[in-house]
Amino acid sequence: MRIHGRVDSYWQDNVLVLHAYGPFNEEGIDQAIEQPKTLVNNRPVQAWNRLEIRDDETMGSPEVAAKAKAKALDAWFESNGCRHIAVVVRNNMQIYVVQELLQSHAKVFHDLNEAKKWLAEKA
Image: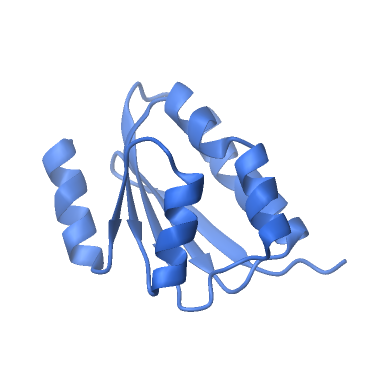
């Protein structure tokens, strides 16, 4: 099946930025999970923060959400140095999904600048 959904992942100082675009299918979530893991594995830092930015269409089916939760990416990030997570959402459905999937240090924002400010205070 064709991949739906995309995540651009990159380091911005000591913050791993994950910018998600479009609706995701199961193949898309698989790719979205592996790319940031590779970035973390290739950067020897002890502690870092994560910024997730979702566009208006970033969603997934219940199967996609279940797969993302089963992959335990949040726990993997935490065990590999992630200390704080800021998630910028565009709608209330995304808030619900974030609260279901990210059980640890995540804080939800509607404003990108506020999210960046919060992470800077945590650095």
